[in-house]
Every structure is written in C-alpha cells, then in structure tokens.
Length: 541
Image (cartoon, rainbow, N blue to C red; front, top):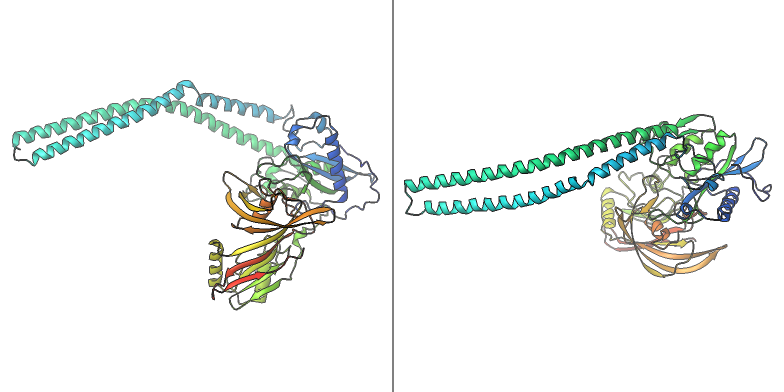
C-alpha cells in the first residue's frame, strides 16, 4: 500500500506541521503524489465507470520508521474493481467483505423491501382499493341525489302548509311522508356505510400487514446502522480509539450521517496509524464528472467535508502538530469609505469576518463597535463572505438599521461585484438562474437544488481576459438580483452557470492567495435624507 515517488524528492522540504484539512494549500509532495495517482488510473486498460462518474481521492505523505518518505492513496466510498483496490488503502471497516455481518443483514432488509413491494402491488389489494374508490364516489353521488330529493320534497310540503287547502288530515299525511322519506334515507345511508366498512376492513388488514413490515424494516435498519457505526473505530496519533457513536456524541446531531468514515481522509490516517507510519501532509482531489448539485472540478483539490469528516478528523488528528486554520488570523484594518451621523460604509478586507465567529473574535462589526461604542443595537446591515472583500454598510442606530435592511429585502439597494474567473467564458453577458440550498453535510458549502432550492438570479458581463502567471483568467462584473448564501460563487462555478469557478475559491474551485471576489459598488437612497448614494471602491486585482 505504501508508494514511493518515481522522481527524486530530496530537494523538497517537508512541512513543519501536518495539514489543517479544512483549509489548506496542498504541499508540493501532495501534488506530486496526486499526479502519480492520476497517472496510475490513466494507465489502466479500462478506466472504471464509477470513477468516470466522479469520485474524491486523497493522498497522505508518510515517514517510515527508517526515515524514508512515501505516500498512501485512498478514495471515498467504494470502487468495483479488485485491481484498483490493491493500489489504495482499505476501508476502515469493509462493509462488502464476505465475512461482514452487513451483507447478511442487508439481505434481510432487502427481503423485507421485496415483501412490502409485493404486498403494495398485489393485484387483489389494488383491485379492492380501486373498487373502494369507485364505490365511494358512486355512493357520494347517490347520497347527494337523495339529499336533494329530501330538500325538494320538503319545499313542496312547506308550500302546501302555506296554502289555504291545509287541514288536519293533510298535515298528518305530510308528517308521515316526511318521516318515511327520512327513514328511507337513513336505511340507504346505513347500507352504504356497511358496504364501505367491509371494503375498508379488507384494505386495513392488508395495510396493517404492510405497516408491520415497514416498522420491522425501520427497527432492523436502525439496529443495523447502530451496529455498523460501532464497527467503525478510528485511531489518533496518541493511540486512542473511538467509534463513530462516541465521536458524534459531541456534535449537535448526535448521530453520524450516512457514509461517515468512508471518505478518503479517515481511511488514510487509519492505515498510517495501524502500520506505524508518521503522517506528514495530506490532500484530497476530485476526478471525473461533477455531481448534479455539488460543484466539483476535475483535478482540483478540496478541503475535507465538514458534516461527515470534521468530527472524525478532529479526533484522529489529536497528537499531531497541525497547521493553524489560515482564516483564524486576525486582520484589524478596515477602510472607511463614507460616514455621517446615521451610517457608514467600509471596505472589508478579504479574510475578515463580517460578524464575530465562535472562535474568531475580530470582525467588521467588532471593530466598528470599538470605533463607535455608542452603537448599542445591530450594526451590520448585510454580510460578505469571509473571503470576499468590498463595501459593507453599517447602521449607527436601530431605526437606520431597520430601514436599510428593508431596502435590501425589497431590492432597492443595487450591488456590483468584480471577480476573476479561472478560465474563459463563451457568452460575454447574460443572466444566471439557478436554485440554491445548503449542503447540510458539508457546511458552509451550498449546492444547486432544482427540487427544494431557493431561486437565485445573477446578471453578469465579461470585462476582459488576461493572464496571471500561467493561468488565463476572465474579469467579470456580477450583479446579484437575489441575495442567497454563496450565490455568486455557486453561479460562477456550477456547470449550469458559467462553469468557471472564481479564482481562489477553495470550496468550489481551487485555492489561491485569496478569493478574487470584491464588492466594488453599492447604490441606494440614504435612509434619512433620501439622497441617491453611489459608493465605489475599486478592486486591487
């Protein structure tokens, strides 16, 4: 499983600390190892279809006990090829092993699924349900007809009672007629109800049988899932071991998401610890097509996922000296672009939070409140991503804050962004409409979701193409007509948008010195004077 570099690496300096897996620039050795993995896969006589459809791979640079340097390789999930499996580290727990309890239990659940399907699609059952719906509809029509007859007959009797011909004998006859018709209606209703109840009972017997099987399937699945999670046991550099249940007990969800522990990063570290290999650096990269909703690009490096991997890797990295999160560094300089007694506009640098985070203390809001301690209410009217630079509006009192927020909600405030895209675009201007929703297992990433996503609209225009080093980039103007999280980043990177990520976007593209996205212009009416305000701050790239 250990691979040695084909080229001489003696002149490459090893990193002093292990990779912080959720925000990193891949080390040169990781890039070389990733290239060797790609070359290996391309050398195969038949490229596996499940890789072609898209898969995350990972490499881990390790030091052996004799001081030699090599690397391990892994992939997320499964690949149906024994030849390929021999090149990569094994899973933490092999679900598909012939000796695994999982296969036998999965067969039992599959049998339950087959029984449920057979019952739900049984011809007699479907026929009873169909007949019931037809008979019920016929009975409703019949009941409505009889009700109308009762109403019409009552009207006739009422007219007779109001006429001069009414006498005691006629009144008695009208009463008996009314009683008879009501009794007949009740008899009809009873016959109909009894007929329907027999069909309902026949349907209920089948549905109860189906419900019992579904409940058993649910219980068996939960038992299987719990047993499975207890089999996934992860080491750390201190030699401590925890299973998935123990690891996720400390998270808000308490329960591991499906697929936890099957990503490349945990597999790599687990194999290294089991075989007394010292981890040096790690990186994960994507090969194959991008998934429909997520944004992945061939050959790009990506941070480890938050929902599934962060709790696991937090445990597994204990005992290693790990790099600091690059985004946790404090930047305290903000430029004031406009200020009056009601509000101010500032230029937020890339790398600064808009509002304080859980660990990061400094933010635009905290710095502004230091400058203006008289601000007691909310100050930030709108936010920019931590990596995005540009203009932000700040309110000095609650009323102004409310007015400005309403202007954003009603889209009375126009914003423009400038971005550098990693590549070229065929169509030089247009409108992007893609629905966006959070990727709950990999926050803060967003995804394109055509079923439940919220519509997001962006107008774009190509400004110029230029070269930065060996890269060809395109400078574009982006005007969001809606305000979804990561809207511009997703619309640029997704294949149904511009298909070209913003330079430096490590979530949807590849990491660079910074995210080349800048809010350069904002236009609105002053919340108090109603004077038209146009504030601009040119990008520095």
